[in-house]
Image (cartoon, rainbow, N blue to C red):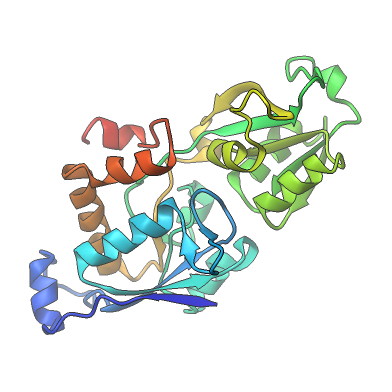
Length: 273
């Protein structure tokens, strides 16, 4: 399923390329029409409103980047399990769906510089009294994660021999089974836990267990970035320049504060490096 964000301009592609400051070289110029894959639902990053239209932080950010880069962009909904294979088989041209830069993924795709860094968090039902520090007490408990994510990698490596790991196609399915008491714990992106389980609310039935996590980098990566095929270096550079632009003029922070009450910027963007 696709959603079109049309930004065609009456100017030749050559002018677009010069305007973006791309150097002439061995790589083809970034395409004017770009299909961007996104995994839905993943609130507040991407979801459908009551009219079935795509909304969310990454949808707004992606549309802004396409406008800055003067690209004609089209959103393509794709399940997470097949999102990298779909890119490599040319079903779409980019992935912008909270994908972390990790060594394993860098062997398959080319990433832009990171644009966001969302921590991970354990969630349990209020009053469950689960202690992550007492590994013996975890025996026999179940935890839900979204399959193929960095959350999955972390739980598998750190708790695969201590917890019954249940893997799901979407984060929404993880939250649903926690609500249905088919899980004892969930390990989710912090923004998703806030949105789907309302862990920040005093009236919520669910609470955060332990601290928020964004390390080790070997598992959780350097931050969320846009992924393209390895040969599409010009497209990655085009998105990087647009990202630099929305950071430089404060647009990124404005969009961020519309959806989050905490800082989503990765360390590299905070330091200006």
